[in-house]
Image (cartoon, rainbow over all chains, first blue to last red; front, side, top):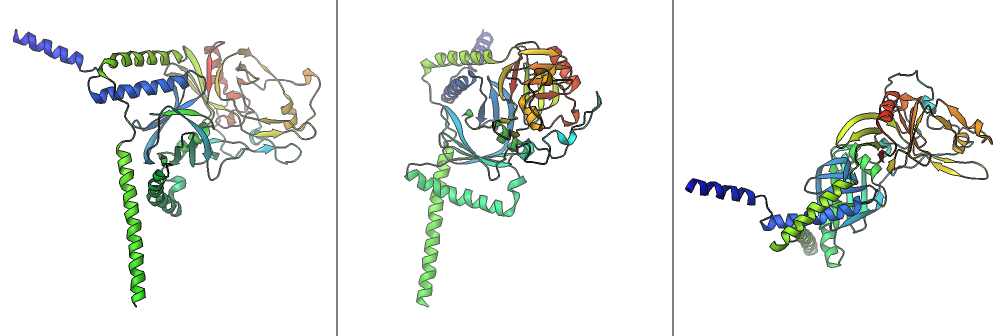
Length: 226
Length: 214
């Protein structure tokens, strides 16, 4: 009899276990509801949007709730208390050397347009390696490896790759001064003036990751931050 | 001597003051960090089942937005095409997308074209075997040729390969004579695919198949 009661008690505990019993669980449930609400609002539309999962340490480009591209974060740091309620919209993308489109004006340039360097058809079925020469085109390799994004809620995000473009001593020194002296002081005095700092720095493993984020994050893209 | 000592003391005081302010800002920063990212609001016990139902409904609705059956995904940065069914990749192909170049027409009209592959959600609108290319005005302007008046002078056969999938506004997923340029951004906006990959994709998809270009 005692054994049966113990089994029943264990089963009951097992069934009750996965439920949302604790305070932390209900908070997680509330957060899930609000993030799903925000994402559903974006996914209803056919436009692309991004999801930045802070705890999951990844940035995703999505459409209709489907992840098209995932960029895992190598590291992240921040100053202030970035506000993540609801959706955010990218208002400005800033890079030291922003890529520029090539403008062709026939009759004014001597060079031929884009396909000219290899404008020789190959024999059918030829498996050639991709061409490596420079083309008159705007490609992923032309995108900046370090840039900044400004969102409509005042959030400022710095995107960079580990090492790479930011590895020179001068850049590192300037970064350290900005991050360890300028930012804390701005955060302290900005709070008193009612303009709190809200800055994130996201570091990715590959330079190509940063470049492809620049490529895919167009002005006006909306997103949610979990 | 006294003035020198006074100046040193003042400089030391200023430095200590600066360190104190910096220290205070770090304390505040750490306090902010301890409550970030913010957790969700607490839910009253009686509301939990209602919120759970709401979450389930939202998850179901989100699932309903996903494309059904086969769909095409194109990454314009990496020049890759994926034929997918759910999470499963059925075919991955190296392609060529738009060059991003701007062509400006000389002379009076001053029209301009941006050779980007359009990004967004599209559907396969037409399936064409042995397509021919009706050259638009920009093709002649780019080559420095006069724009012909007759339609017959605009038609070019063989350029688009064996198959073409139209997805609106004159844009196609089609074949190429320049397979060496696959993987590079060289087109005027269309998506060029190698012969074998194009044949596979063309045979697999039907009119109405979703295309996501990002």
